[in-house]
Image 1 (cartoon, rainbow, N blue to C red):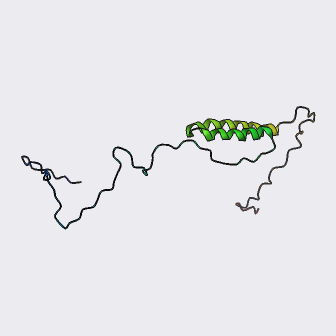
Image 2 (cartoon, rainbow, N blue to C red; image 1 turned 30 degrees about the vertical axis):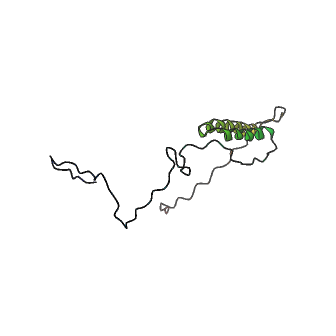
Image 3 (cartoon, one colour; image 1 turned 90 degrees about the vertical axis):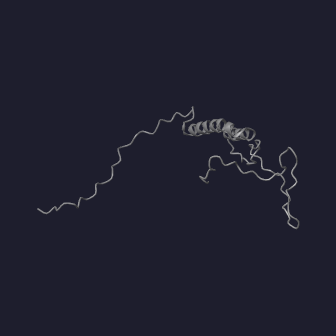
Length: 134
């Protein structure tokens, strides 16, 4: 960038009206572009339409989990900002399914494991920082 400015009263310089190419000098040709429309091979900056990712889901054998994993296919047809709701829903369901594995079945009458005697903690290390001679 230049800080040069014309002096006051100096008229601006404009190119001559008729600029012709001298004989024997070639000029680069401009490519043929369609009039009034975008170039066919120009990249589009618009977001792509939702499309399935094609990820195969292997059945787990647990109907509840398989149904949740199938729910992930709903995200294939949503724009990216709609994926969060599907993922959070599936996450809640999978977390619930895992938590239910820790719970005892309703008909299990066995008592909970009784706490045993306290386990001894680690033996304190020998303190060799002091002189223990008497």
